[in-house]
Image (cartoon, rainbow, N blue to C red; front, side, top):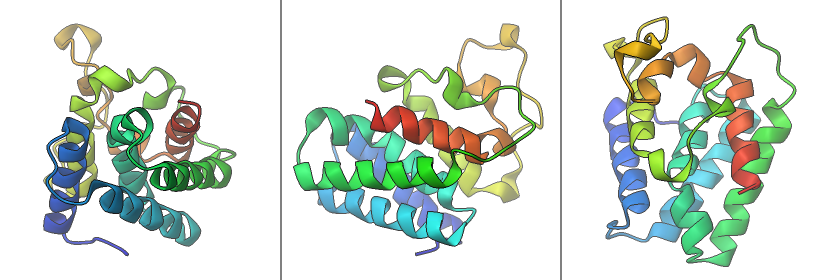
Length: 166
């Protein structure tokens, strides 16, 4: 399933963030499984949407891994993330570093919502081509807000590897 309309992505990102926050009123295991299925299809198709699906699962990670509400959903998510790591882990790139290299997982996922918004809305072009200098902000995400680095196959594989190892 490809979501090309920004409003469709906005709805999904809202759902994923609500799942992470613990106040999603829908069927959370179903929403997570849908994301995992779409991620696997996106990886097979080498779709640019792979970044959004991968980071969507990262955003729901605390729910999936730590709350353990559904063993089948957890296994499916781990399988999808394993597929990302396997398909993209050997990719080469020119980046010296990636956000996955030192991403503060768990407590700091609030900023990931902004990354997903940035990736879902390339028409806004709100992200600079270069990260902000470290002394301008103490927000970890603001220093790494480039589409190119977040969507880099090696970055996605790194997040998938960290997720599976969680």
